Image (cartoon, rainbow, N blue to C red; front, side):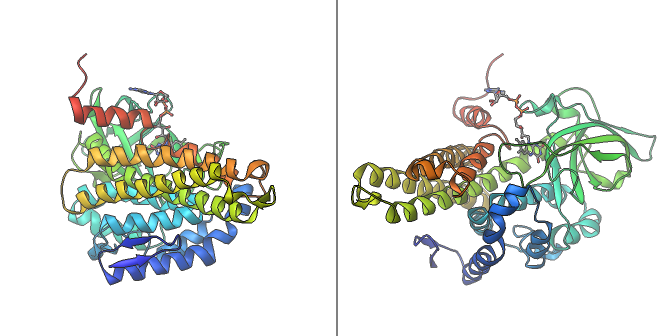
Length: 391
Ligand SMILES: Cc1cc2nc3c(=O)[nH]c(=O)nc-3n(C[C@H](O)[C@H](O)[C@H](O)COP(=O)(O)OP(=O)(O)OC[C@H]3O[C@@H](n4cnc5c(N)ncnc54)[C@H](O)[C@@H]3O)c2cc1C
């Protein structure tokens, strides 16, 4: 199924339904998302009402089971939707990706009763999720996390600790939280589904970030937060494996968002190069810029091919973690380079807030850090190549 997109590139889509879905997303992106992006990012305003619209349009649960309100779409299609959203505004693409990540533990490891109770509202009922793994002293080494959940006899769990860098921290309706229930290391961690308004749960003021100002990132404090045992997801001690499994898929979302951002930067650069004249000619005539634009376009295409390859492996039920780490690494490094080059193509104007490319450059940096820094992606890829490090 061929599909000619806004960037004029032919795409292969598996079904007519997928083609119609992408057309709907492009329409929402063009009418509702892109026109407000610059102003709201400058103001640091999170577009909550846009997420309500995305939920009503069935876009907040795309890769999940339709029996629980999901869209039943393959990852290959879901990721191309994310690319479109991120090309219009990264905050929105990333927000959908993080929400999807936050639903992963319940969808994959919840009991039938847990899924029936919570998933429909999470996938299509207007709720927004947060994924809470990182802590102030446990980032790349997430298995060292200290937030503790202690069970009172056969009763509730009581959670105490601090989570750091939480996207949607303070505004999320539900939080998927990894907490220590056993001894040190990865095997002592359990996953919980915590309501965003649980007594004892509070958020610090949002971090003041280089970019992505419309996407709140905050510390979350758990001070005696009580949850019943039916909010434990998976077995005790299974939480870290659940968290890493979610991240394998989540990294593909980051890769797709990176390609969307890079594509937006490329489009700006091409339009400007055609328009701007120096030495009596459009600057697009100069081979120095033509080659730069050609390299930028090649990175966008190569990134898309890599995330789609990983997505197709996942859709076929095959092992995709190595390819997902490569996609996250390549696509986010490509986004950093392409957005930097887009600023160069625009010259002095590229360095001002009058054009979006300076914002794109600031946003791209974040993608190299989240959901495992790009150093950690290399650690993961190398483990697949040569096995674990000896100590
Ligand atoms: C905007 C934003 C949003 C975020 N959203 C979320 C969220 O929603 N949920 C969540 O749980 N977390 C979130 N994070 C946290 C993010 O996942 C962490 O920042 C990231 O995992 C890195 O952890 P750290 O910042 O503690 O850096 P550190 O782990 O302290 O790393 C510092 C540096 O050391 C390098 N390094 C560390 N270990 C190694 C190693 N073994 N080999 C080579 N280099 C290494 C790193 O690559 C990095 O360059 C977010 C972060 C940001 C900036």
